[in-house]
Image 1 (spheres, protein in one colour):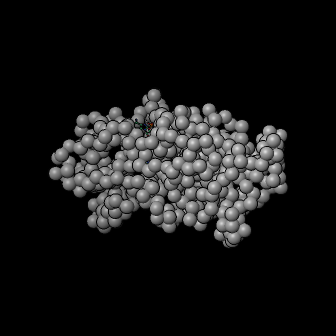
Image 2 (image 1 turned 45 degrees about the vertical axis):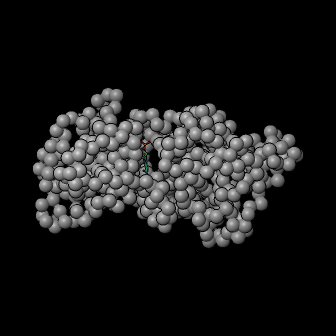
Image 3 (image 1 turned 90 degrees about the horizontal axis):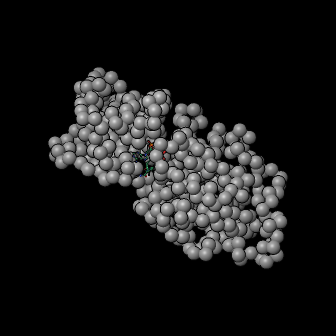
Length: 430
Ligand SMILES: NC(=O)c1ccc[n+]([C@@H]2O[C@H](COP(=O)([O-])OP(=O)(O)OC[C@H]3O[C@@H](n4cnc5c(N)ncnc54)[C@H](OP(=O)(O)O)[C@@H]3O)[C@@H](O)[C@H]2O)c1
């Protein structure tokens, strides 16, 4: 991404005009935009200062800590003379994922680069890794066949910093993935690249469940597709896995935490069943002694249809039980640690069942941009056809005058359990 002009470095005359001109939205000729129903619920907003400078805000951090302590809303301006090959983007929507919070806390596997590019008092990084942006303008050397005004783009790799109203991207071909926006809402496009891609890869890259299904049917013994089991089944990844599993003819055992009332728990179970889950149980039922026996007797034909893939994003006793449900030679893929408890395994599972324990990290897989591009395209195709539903979200509107405190609180609340939906910043009048 390009070096930007900090607000402090603007010409004095420009600075003086800030209050009167820059903070007042000035409608301009409307560019070509998607159909109104596909827009975020916002007005058209084009914030421009004198000499065409774009006024931008970003949620940045300069040291690790709790989001409410270390995040700051930083204002800067972006010059209208774009470098030859660059693009100026405005944000449409950007989710707040658990990994984003871990990154700010300094506990994530990848550390962001703290830079002075935005002119912050201390070198900083912009929070957020996922989101969709719209192209506002392109440098003179960018062919319109490649990127043009109104196109929608996603970050190609992690560390992009998506919690910002605008961004200048110097090497768009390398840094961005263009998506066909037809038939999509900004929230659908903004939430495709982390959770659905993770679910897709974990179901396809560790155990060949499709091949197992085919063999099962060929033998005449299987009563359905191959099984997988997962905890955190109502998470974004979990819901994606349920739906992809259904589309690929797989069967799934899904573990969720009980809600406050029985009715709410039943409603959550029903929701997942409607998405395509085969079995949904609460963590309480799952942790009961003899659950692995129940898997055999109730669902997997006395264990003849083995469960050979387990997806774990919780850890602790939940992960141990998940491993106990796997058949001989099965694989448990760990991709999260929501309970913050380690994965502990009885030795017998290793010796007598020869289980395999693997880890999945999207950032590692996403280094292969081509593979990521392809998977995103496939998932968005399913979304357009109505075959894949995005997870429930809590939209958090980010306007020009949205206070720093409101944005920080939205991030801080992300790791709290029992949420009704994932927080997603939806950019309005910025
Ligand atoms: N390794 C990777 O590349 C990768 C990629 C994507 C996601 N992830 C990880 O996958 C996990 C889910 O991410 P997401 O974005 O899909 O999550 P999400 O939609 O924000 O949902 C969070 C999930 O975690 C559960 N949870 C929260 N606290 C918990 C606790 N103490 N014990 C058990 N479950 C708890 C929630 O259950 P309740 O509703 O009951 O609270 C919910 O199912 C996270 O750990 C995330 O970091 C990893």
